[in-house]
Amino acid sequence: MTLQKITIKNRSYGKLSGVKIYLTSELFRRLSRVKSRSGTAIDSLRSGRAVRGMKHLIAMIKKANSNSKIVFTSRKSRKDGLDYYIDYDMYIKHGQDIFFTFYRSTGFEVAQTFLGKIFPRQFAVKKGELTTRETHKVESNLRTVLRNLSSKIKNKKILLEETTQMLRETREEKRQLRRGITRKIEGLVELQRQSNISYYTEKLQEFERRLGKKFPETKGKNSWQKWIYNNAWLFGIYYHEPIDRVKIGFDSIPDFLFPTLDGFLDILEIKKDSFDVIKKDSSHVGSFMWSPETNQAIGQVVNYITEMELNQLQLKERINQVYGTMYRSSIHTIKPRSFILIGTSTAWSDKEREAFRKLNYSLHGIEVLTYTDLYKRGEKIISMYTEKSLK
Image 1 (cartoon, one colour):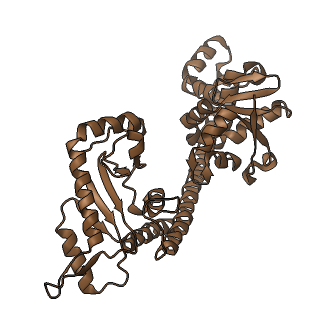
Image 2 (cartoon, rainbow, N blue to C red):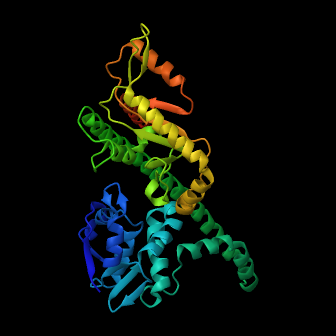
């Protein structure tokens, strides 16, 4: 079996930074196609962040035998000589179920329970040693345990005195632990907030650099369509991951649909930032009308809405078949809202801004946005994160 070697480089791994793990070719190919913030899932593995509790899993296996290989696979976990083949999907699910509550201590619990379950001979809990879960069982049944013990031990006074002292110490330890966990959680929340600010600021600067340059609307990896869909956060926190037309096999709809948090669909039609949005109406002094490019986009969106409403049951069924497990409830295709992104409004006069607002108001279920508007939304999102981090 061919294995793909990956070197993990992460300062938080301490002495384990630089450790090598392996992937079966089948799993390597699959994860190479999975996108992540740092590139692909393979890049996330190299940074040591792809799998919760992975540091602790590696630490436990290497402590048992430093010569053991850790191989992630798509198949059932097993041991082959000194090497441990770990079911990647199973371990991720196992970690997700219990990891967030106790962070570091739970990381060891994840590794201990998983390895003890799959490889009991090498990682069985030592005699007299309790796992975290077993400790909780003792605490929840302590009253019954004490009652049974006191009926068998003559000197009940000693038992009660020692138990009382133990309970005092346990309560104090729990208070300290809760304070520590609270501080850690607050620190992690703040770290995430700062990370979001940094990421969004970088992307907004990239957005500003793109404006005025000749990027295509839809074709190629540098198209506006691809960039906007990868940075849908600019529209706020209202959307799930976009729905790809190709995946659901439906032709007469936009390339991507945006499912809202309340289970409905929005349409986004993207045009170039170099296009005019409005133009003067030569037949009426002081009046404006939509530019030919904007009018064309409005016509396209009207056709999309008509097709979606005519085929809403079939469309809903296909979306829920492909994407249903990603959302808490099914997606509804009734009355989709539509947005058209086109042109810029940086150099507009007050009259042009007023005309744009009036023209937008005349549309029903469709809103025209300029790239300038979208940039300002990004600035507002970053300012909200910044304000929260200062509180």
